[in-house]
Length: 317
Ligand code: ACO
View 1 (cartoon, rainbow, N blue to C red):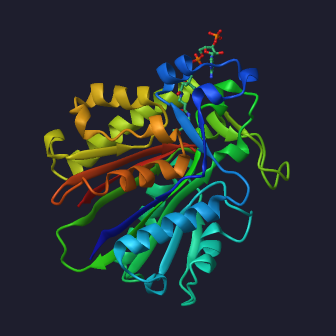
View 2 (cartoon, protein in one colour):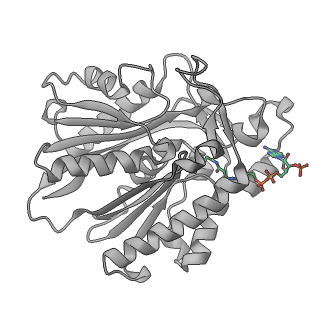
View 3 (cartoon, helix red, strand yellow):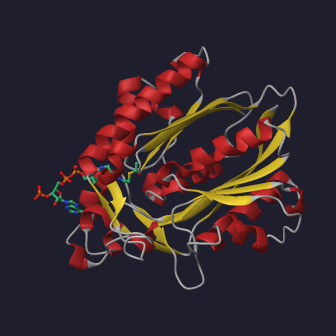
């Protein structure tokens, strides 16, 4: 049984903030942000927008693209660490918003920037076990709500957004998800962490990070996990048609291109337009390129996030 992607969707908040529109009090510049990160702008939620509203929009988009109705869905997973509430799960809010009344399981997966890869891995396992026919998998985050807007070293990096895919269980399909591998190393919890949480400070806290260490770890794990994926699937670098890495910093992506000796044209970059939208970067990028992917293509997804968590997925489109 294979999990085949039959629909893509995405949603961004209405408000876009370009680098030179950031508050003067931050003492930053378009030049610094562009050169150090590749980011040109970010989208930030406003009145009436939240992780669930963006997720719902992305999901509707993906369902329309897949040409199936909401009640065909029998599994909903949202990869997020910035849900509307501590509980219920954002996936349940999305279920309600979509009018899904068939009682399908709906839950969130917390793996920070790796949330979408983890969620896709879980959904693929449900499908392989025969427990779902159509799964809705969403990566969504609104980091603008957990940033210290006085800390220029972190607040300029992130934005809000959601991306979604619909998976269909297909027997004997050549295409679909071929390989998933996820990892975590909890000894790095202090490297990228919010300053509080429900059972400690009763709030969400704000993002803190050791930027340079995160940078190094991301490059190392992107390369390791990519090499492992090639080996496990008997592929050469040339056999890979597209790579969609988590979009944290264009310099991390450029290092990956250098070390792995990949044709840069095969690497999808959206960080200039979207910034780092955490769990949403990969599904948003998939949605951006959905019409140009083509068929019989090997697409590799690579993620890395707080925990640290990381992983890779190979999809035959
Ligand atoms: N504008 C202007 N100057 C700034 C800014 C800013 N926004 N932020 C930091 N600086 C200054 C610093 O104060 C420092 O000044 P100093 O030399 O006078 O002390 C100088 O720029 C250099 O700072 P560094 O932190 O050394 O800059 P670096 O080149 O390492 O870039 C960055 C920082 C962009 C955070 C980089 O380390 C990075 O991208 N790390 C990866 C972390 C990341 O992407 N996290 C996202 C979440 S993780 C994930 O998604 C996987």
